[in-house]
Length: 413
Image 1 (cartoon, rainbow, N blue to C red):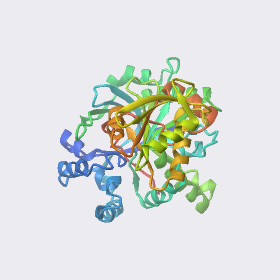
Image 2: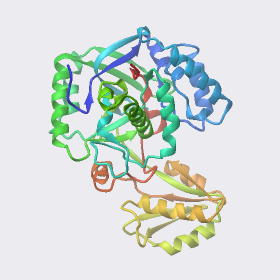
Image 3: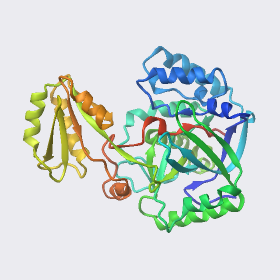
Image 4: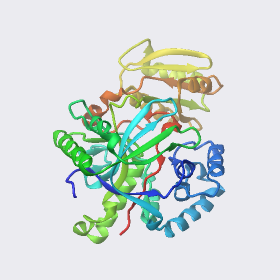
């Protein structure tokens, strides 16, 4: 059955895994995690031990700029060329999953396909699917090239939906999960927690799609879906689809599998979903000079937009006198960008975790900044009013809580 919705069922490919150990080898964490920790990826390869794995189809960003980039990249190309859908099981529908995170909380999600006709990553987009952070256009061409050569997609994209009690989308799935077939149920590798996936089909699927159609209709004209993780992956999928449209024509492209992107949807209201600020630190700088520059744009104490400035072992609360952005992180980023631009050698880095920031800021030649995160309840309203957030505004959980590659979908005819 065909559904006239933005998010819809897909032909999902899953491995023919016989044991939980086989599943554990198959599922690998998103390639943009542990970028500075090669030991993690060495442990990943050791655990896989030559078994069937999504690692065979993805390039960890930790490999970029190393000798492994070319060697593993060549292996990926060969694996994609040799990929045989017959070696996989096919499930037609939506996967309802329960992901137990390392901290014990449970994230609820749905895996299906998103219609890229309903998406634009432009900052001022009014499309139903919105980017939540500024898209760095230079990142798209290399990713688009990889997608163009790929037989299948393996998503680490996480999209947000605002599932209020009256919508009852995830509640409806939870109420019927005991009647659904279990597609997978296993511990994720290297401390990633546990994941269980249920196949939503038949009457359960029809009921779910009715609720999704009502949700999309109710929110038409505003933000229907918002990007959580994998913004540049979805942007690359969009760019690839637009290239196909230009090549074969818009009418022919309507039925092309590249029109869609496989992803997971989770609810903004899910209790496991925590927005954490991504802090800023200036390195290789003259801390006293940074402090003088701050004196020109900030004043001591609380205000509309407040930051805690960390220098050495000391901290001072200051507020921006004349904010340049609707969010404190945007105003701070404007200051940081201006300072870095006018001070050769000074670098801005992005840090997760207050204690990590404080520890790093104790070293000479460093100035750190702490600030409050954008409240997740305000995300959809902010994006609808202002467009994308400043780069690296927030993170959704720690590295091991990110999505693992698990489901696949063909993207070539």
